[in-house]
Image 1: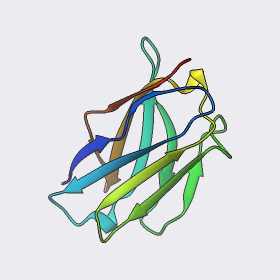
Image 2: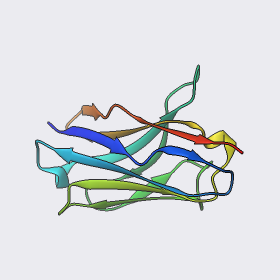
Image 3: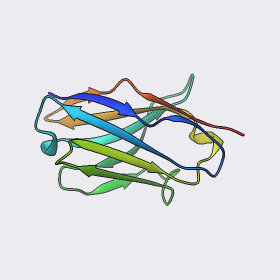
Image 4: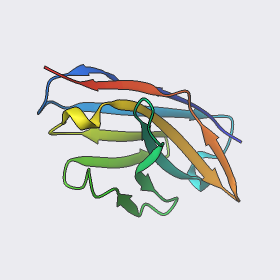
Length: 115
């Protein structure tokens, strides 16, 4: 299993950028598929981006061209670079690791996009 801790959230203006980080410990990080989810108040938790153990990436249509997911296996860290942020990107962002039918979650980090 892995333990996940997110960081990098905060308040930004529309059009701004943030980079979220998710630090993993307690397991062999490189074998896990890594995902970023987000959840706005009263809304469903949705998948934003994923990167597989082999490095393949996928994005929700709403963030394509604006967000980039990456991983550094040596540092056991996954990143979400968020550019051209919109108010509708406001949510709690959660890091997720999956392998063998199991899912592990971080506690989330708040991202607020507002002027």
